[in-house]
Image 1 (spheres, rainbow, N blue to C red):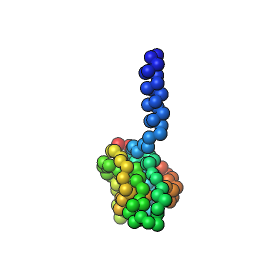
Image 2: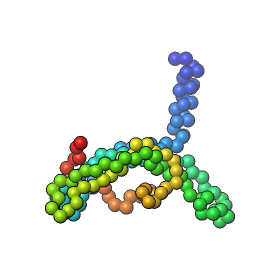
Image 3: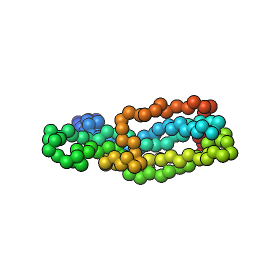
Image 4: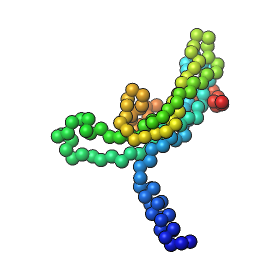
Length: 134
C-alpha cells in the first residue's frame, strides 16, 4: 500500500474518532395503555450523539443564555401513528411517535425534546408484547 495513502487513512480515522457525532440512531419504544391488552415494541430512530461543549470560568459574570450548551437534536422529523391492538371500545387505540430523519447540534427545546441524560422510567412492557410490523 502506498505510504501516503496509509498515512491519510490513519489520519482520517484518528480525526473521525475525535469529532463529535450527532446522527439518527435505532431505538425501540415500548408502548402500552391501561385500556389495551397488549404492548407494542416499535422500532424507530432518535437523535443521539455527543456535542463539543466547554465550561466557562466566568459563569457568574455571563447571562444565563450564554451558558446553555448544544445538544444533539432533531433537524428533520416525521411522525408515524400506530394502532395498539386489544384496546377497549372507549379507549383511543392510536399512538404517534417521532422518527428522526436527520439530526443537528443545537439548543434543546423542551417543548418537544427530553433534555436530560438519564431516562425517567425503564423502557419495557408489563403486558404481553406484540412487535409492530408495517
